[in-house]
Image (cartoon, rainbow over all chains, first blue to last red):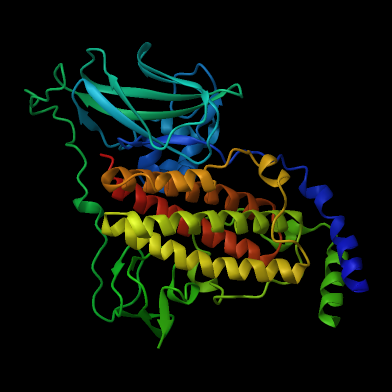
Length: 251
Length: 198
């Protein structure tokens, strides 16, 4: 035990360096998950990590001072979110739009604001309380039509900051109707379907792969060994069979 | 004990060279499968405060995720949500066992105390009250609340892991943080797809 104490003394010298790194560099936050904001599109792989950068891993962290009209919070790591030229999926909507936020921490909330250009089309008070589960808002798009970028802003109650999400919209009609566009040459992409996102079905006894739906009892090879699936799941990078005995049994 | 002495001596010689041990900028790619650790690897004795803080926070984080998973397993109506809840539950139990064994090896308590969350952003998404309130929902509304909370919770886990990859020095803990980054990001991706935002 004496040795352990010595170890502790030596180790105690390390934190002095480590603590220089600011803590609270904030893991806390939120983004609009439905319709899929630019951040959400990065997180779910609609737009590649090469284009998205950090937003893939921290879609919730486009944080900046209140009062901005941008998608990144003027936060350099999230600058790709401001790039209108990236292949963002566009959501077709009528004049009424429902939005759902996903939070990673429940900050006390001043309010939520929604802007198209300089026009505030939506406002919801946060009552300086923590957000509800779920937090879904229905807003009216104020007569705007065509291709628009909606700024969704979560203003925090107890800091100077806000969190920013951008949603690309194709707004049709008035009163929630959605007549088809009259011009075919400028037709925007249709509403996203989920058909392209279904996990692949595995070939019997094949090599393990990520993003594949495995049923109980199915077998795969990985790293020269064979494994049997113990629990139905869709595979992920990091859930390679040797890493997760709960999911795969070596046979 | 002799091994520990050697490890301590190495650490003493290395001084505060945490960054020499863990290369900077190891991204999310190219560090996964081939160096994957066995299910319950022992953590070596070289660690710093960032490692301890991360592991202690993850113990709490994993337990909250397991609690929410169990509600999801019982109440989710979409099969993908149920399967994911079950997989999160069982994989995080394995991780919990591993992390507790590391803290024991290091002679550290399993929780870092109330100050830990306050010092790292505070206002965590999940607590017992929030998890219990989900039990009052049902059907599609439950699925949305469950997936939304779990996506947020696992997203917070990614952020914790990114901090560990930057500040930690214990090789096993940093490798675990890499795995947390990829698996949680993958889970968030799945959950966003199941939530079906267009």
